Length: 122
Image (cartoon, rainbow, N blue to C red; front, side):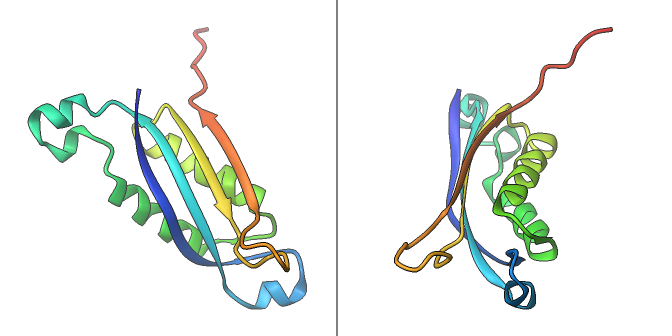
């Protein structure tokens, strides 16, 4: 599998458990590694045959800007679900960071890996 990636996608949203955090917008930063097969796109130079990273970015920006989260873990799970459900991605690694959340640290956050759940036949 090949990897299409997005690095340091910065998005403003409401995130946090403290009252003051619920009243402001903070920046979160996303890195995505998304498994795909780029051979058909490379052979034809047809964007419809590849994973469109701009479309993924626009979808995640729209979702995160409109949503509110208490935990970064919840955001990570929802983002992974969207990518796996709406785009031709069988596996992804996602880093969600919250810059400045801890004094003395440049960034804190979570990294998750998720894949498609095989459908069972009944």
